[in-house]
Length: 396
Image (cartoon, rainbow, N blue to C red; front, side, top):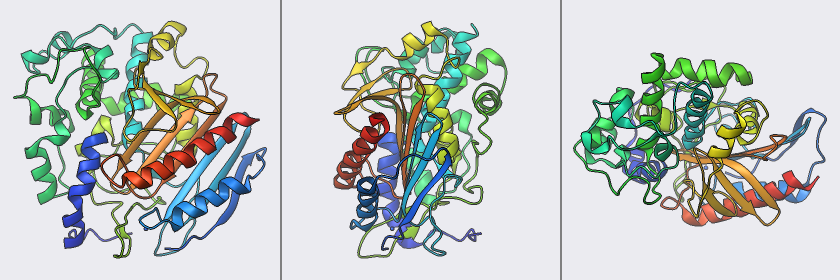
């Protein structure tokens, strides 16, 4: 267990880059291991394995990567590098990890399941359900929050928020008051007029869910998502600690050695927008249901979920051509289409996608952060590898 020592000066100096990626959303030679499988194993593709090996050998690349492919009852884990540089332990499907903005799909799942239960309506507004929020925001609807067309200013870019994190990265925020950092701001544009990814949107979604149920968001996650899908290793912590064992996340800035930043930041500062901790195994089960699993959403709600805005990309962008729906993104690759979400957080970059019938899923996790503003060249390489994995997912 790592001691809660002060953040070293190198981490503080580089935290600006990590926070920039967080706001936009918001390390050793390879130790190659054979694929792990549960159920009936899928054939192991040597070309895919080589690409993961190459990723961890890339300058500035991740110390570890794990990709979980689920095709019907067959599951295979491809992995390269290490989960923990100190011990050399390989990545595992049962390792906990920060799923970053894939957490937005979870808040979307809570909201849309409440729509199914007639507790929420997609046309409900902030003014109706959260009247204490700024009057300038009152016309924004749940639909616009879920589709990132709300115009809400992003709290994670607010100077006061970032100043607190620079001073104390492990600061424990009151998650339900995060929007106060931008409460003096007008909407960036008329609601519904354009797309702009904002971490504020999913904070408001969670607050709406609490308002109509009288239940804490964490309890709603358990009732509406974790228990129905048997997600036993998924949680929404408030502090900076991760459950053991975990996939260690690193700041990789050559020529300096990779630095473990897994527990540098408190999850309270991203909450419903990016604070969930899960495992590749649990995340695979979730995204199968979210992308298209039968019985998870009613048919009409699913149709609304899949009303896409062309060119609306998740952060970071996923493989192929991106389009945005209600807390879900469509990724159209050369081999076909999958649905899901991406995310980036200091130490982690995530992709979780599934097919429209919910029978196939891919989770792809690397242990360093990349986005359009943090290591964009690495992101381009990661997206290309992800597309090859999507092709493998859809091939058989």
